[in-house]
Length: 407
Image (cartoon, rainbow, N blue to C red; front, side, top):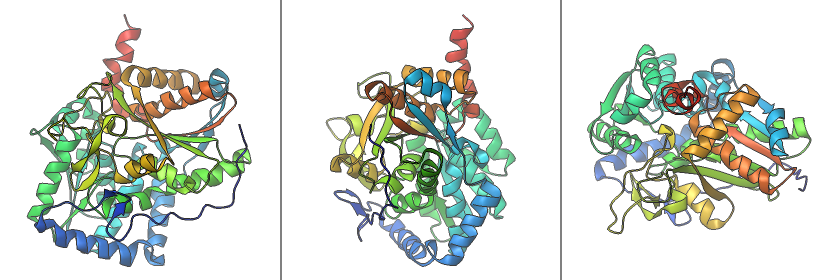
């Protein structure tokens, strides 16, 4: 493989003035939400890159979240895969995942916009925990919407949210997973768009959310880029991240977009297989459509009905994907593939056994994709976004990996 080393990449300026990434993105919402989104966009333009906001945000990331997170060389995986493997350790951030970066930033923004309460949605529970923690830190009440299926399979995170002072609402309508939780949060926001701030957890939804989440999460890629140059003396050949809605992936990828020598690989939830309803791989199997305020790639049938999904990972179990990812795939800059439930669980077990790191099941999809890349590219330098830790997944692992071990 080549040894890419470049000066700092030039910033990528998308989305355009209408919130579009090429053909994707935009704003498809009820008229009642337009004023709230306009206020949010104006607030972003006023505050997000203002030195005072950035100083407070970076202070919280440093002294409370624990940034910068570590870049860890993975010697055992390197030996097993025949490649150099580096892990960007978002699992070491406060609350256990990358979600805290976005939650802190949006809660700080909410206070500047005069909001009285925070609402959030969550799938795997990590954004819910992060939102509850950030709201507690900044003295704001928080309500978290979570699909009833996810409440059951992510019970430890439900208890964490409650201990952090949040009200957790189990959503029993729709598919009872992340999509249903977002729908319910949007209904809440419509009822009180002035006093409520909706802290959206992924790079999805109507403009300006995909842009806002990307900007807050890009700290991941900026740190990783500098750390790779310091630790390895070069940039990676490939950066790999799991993709559900896509916040950790866009956060890792964005600072590398202008580095032509760095391949970017997103790995979706392949679930049980390629059939509609058997996976959550919108980029791999989806078609263009509108979902929850954005034109993107979604899993839908021939009549345009959004279909339920399947993944062993609650955090990737979503029928769509962030519009910037759809654009990056169509532009050819980023490659996307999927990893099945079994491939991802196997990669999780390998990392835990040989590196002493228990990644989240979401992150394990990235490990599975990185392992495949190593098989095809011996000696490559591979950077993996370890988006979160797997403590929250123990109930699932007890019914999958651990049950198999005890047979």
